[in-house]
Amino acid sequence: MMKTKPKLLNHVINLGLFMGIASGATATEMEMPANPTQQFRRIEQPLGLKVGVTLGGIALIGAELWWFLGKKRQVQQATIQGNIQELTVTVDGGYQPDYIVVQAGQPVRLNFFRQDANSCLEEVLFPDFGIAAKLPLNQTTPIEFTPPKSGEYEFTCGMRMYRGIVAASSDSSNDSDSSKHQPQATETTAELAHEPPTLAESVPVVDGVQEVTINVEGGYKPARIAVQVGKPVRLNFFRKDQSECLSQVVLPDFGITADLPINETTTVEFTPQDVGEYPFTCGMNMVRGVVDVQDSISSN
Image (cartoon, one colour):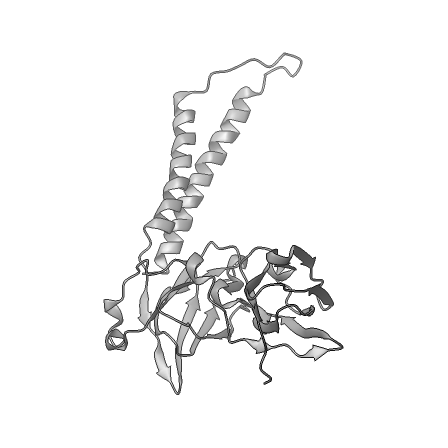
């Protein structure tokens, strides 16, 4: 069922494009004067030509609305494998399934198997967990995270055209029946974006500066760091990932925006003056991390 829909959508889009192009070509031919030396004059378009252009536009708009608004989600419950909830997601004209039910507070592993050569699907993003991962064609790529609380966590392709939902529930009594779970707005992605992506990792002090190296590969590692208030902080971002989304890091609370060249270390320095959580994000504000500023830091 899911494979026939992208094909049908392609047919509708192709029909709209064909009608639009054919109508445009006809208009060009009609407006060309018989004698090149003559001046161009306005020619009224035939009613049939106008109808063709209109129908082509309607076909394209209808196809887009049908795909994004009329699509019925595939709901599936992740299964327990050892101590982790696991599920395989087929990437073919979208995500199958695209609504995944899991238990909140327990590790999740989603195995993305990409069959579609569409370049839009060569990357998957989990903005709430600071994850951006490449999906090589005809290979399985595991993605692991732990949803901290109940709610809906969105994942998308690199261009945010294809989307799916991880629905985390704290009610274990309903987990055995995935048919009871239906897409619903329990919490918005914007609200969940403030949730720290991982547990905080303390930053060591080097020559009076709190310093740590953050690897930029499929997200930020570590994605949440703990520092002490009032002391200088030095973050060394080493970017390994070629994703354009990760080519820049932004620390809005400190007025910092820095480019991250591939396979190079970029140093960012600041001194937090107040206790609190300060996000750092990619240039597109899709992949995120947190600087957790505390009164004191306990040694690991």
